[in-house]
Length: 332
Ligand code: ATP
Ligand code: LTN
Image 1: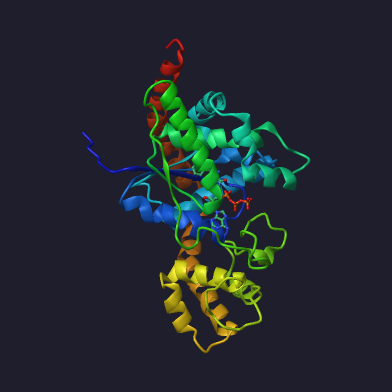
Image 2: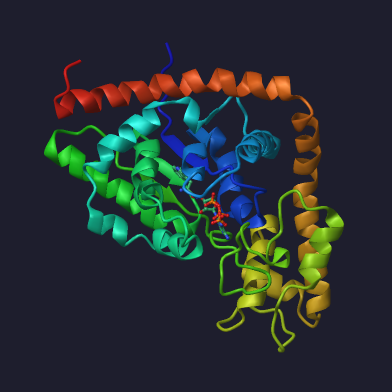
């Protein structure tokens, strides 16, 4: 019998295009790191993806590539469960139930809804609005203790906590109330072109983001073009958003502190600094890119992996859903 004392982790990412350095440093790198100390459950949030219109063939391609890319980054199926959300129907089922324990006012305060409805003014669908209920279902189904996310998802996690506490209060303890894990550096990687905005894969200016699969040449070029300031001194300070951002990226990869980075580049210009950051990024991503190319060539292996992992996730999710339905008063 399995007797595990490990706390459980759950996190997901939407398979909506190539992942950026922001996704990697803010969330995905942590997914990999946490696998030894926690029981981890990870998934591709393809149900979430359709809050924005997706072309069917492209969604299929993105999902398979995202699956390969996360394996390439080091998600280890011997240690963790890694599945595709739409293959475990309990997510949709619990999401509906949680919709009825979430207030319109709470959802109206979500900043991502406000941002995305501005960006996609022609398609402000109900799913975009109730998306945090689906995210709460994702987390609560697995009784997760911790959820690794970037800073932009903190508000959604707080809503999941509120809904869990509310449900537990109305009935009896049912859900574990989850806590976020947000990295110290990398939690909010900013655009290289406008360091007051978060780095985003949907940025129309491709120089604003580095994609995890960008070639070394492209990475170095984008780094060299990154917006800095006129001071020409590598130090972490207010008003130096561009430099702060590059220092954050460098720190996240090399694990050097801001003081160590300032000392390393004392007396040097931004040119040397950008080259060093660019090279660190290239070296960090190189093994991931190589592994990705091997994995994406082996579709049969990928299919076998996600097919095996869905029932493992479902075994956990269905237990929680059953408990919830019984408490609400459904005939079983
Ligand atoms: P889009 O740019 O289309 O809004 P996204 O890049 O934000 O999408 P998501 O799937 O929403 O991608 O995010 C996946 C994970 O990556 C989340 O945990 C999120 O917090 C994290 N993340 C996204 N962008 C950044 C960023 N710039 N810095 C740090 N973490 C990020
Ligand atoms: N909403 C997240 C993706 C996501 C997620 C989750 C993250 C869906 N379900 C559960 C953590 C836990 C996003 O858009 N970044």
